[in-house]
Amino acid sequence: MADITLYNLPGCPFCAKVRSTLDELELEYDVIDVERDHGKRTEVEAVSGQTGVPVLTDEANDVEGMHESDDIVAYLEETYGA
Image 1 (spheres, one colour):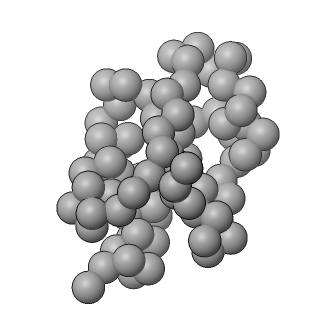
Image 2: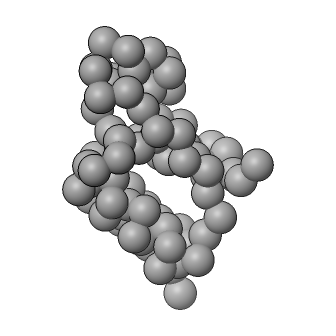
Image 3: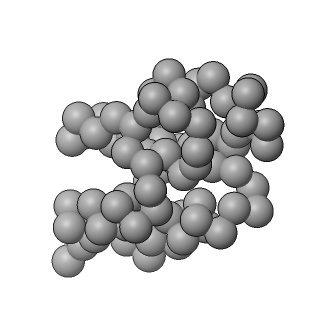
């Protein structure tokens, strides 16, 4: 199990943006695909306090429930970029 987990909705362009950054940085990460129905996204809500995706957790850096794709990409590049 990787330290980084991405809560993802297949087909979501914001999630794809984050996955692309994770792949470019060659980071290991787990993906949890969420339901399309916001009412069924209880796990995402428990982690982040909201039901939107993408949401990222990074156990190695005590990051839990980071949302907003631009914020996630900036965090990943700052933390793991060259």
